[in-house]
Length: 344
Image 1: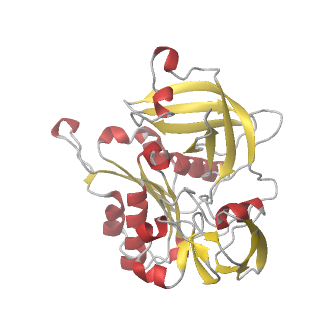
Image 2: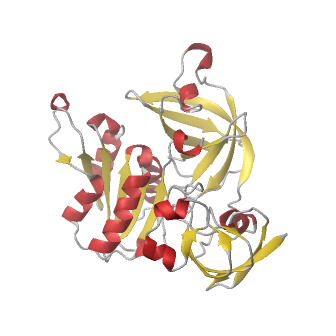
């Protein structure tokens, strides 16, 4: 049995099969609603159900406030209709040549940064251009059917070479393979199956508001892709990157960010470390990275924010920026990374 979902204000309609989530059904119909993790760990796909019944799952009660739940808000990646629905959500216009597809990939390069970040360069089939927006992610399809998601750290290039930044999560089925030893270690020339592109985290280029890029850990990866696209297209929008880590080594491409700040006239960079040790000799900003933004820019009402990293950082920034600094919620764009433990 299927149900019909109508999206307000566009009035677009799409069918949802029994047991299918609203988000998955919308994507299958070519309708892109805002989304990131797709597993209920963030609130990017939050939207309002105006009428109709659905199974919400456990995640909304953990992610959304009681007030939001009472107003009919839910997470569309988890909501499964039990009747026809009328929902309120902003649709995202995607270029017609950006299509989600499965394909083989070959590992071309492995370069380790510090103790726990691996930069992987993947070659996708060169004969068929892989179109995506800088900031989107792809998924590895593992042999047992499980999936692991990683943002692409470079904008599209003609030879379909993709860069990914993978942090080691000890005990993780995929990252233990990336960082393994001997026969268990990922090797150059290895073939992996991937699907993408996914996500609605990319620069809104029809806007000229100044930008705050906010990253924690490997949340730097999609922001790197966006900044490199801005450079390639001579986008002169004013932008500042706040990049946070527990220790200085977590800012694994610190020199790259410094290079942007030193060479781009409208770009600045603020590194923030929360748990520096004496031996780190850290003399820069300390504390939580999103709080550094509020200290420097108490009024965000005229900005757009692009935040990527741990769900707790993204969620804290979303709540504090909209509540304390006047940032319109529609100008907060996010990609919340989940660990392998979150999705096993």
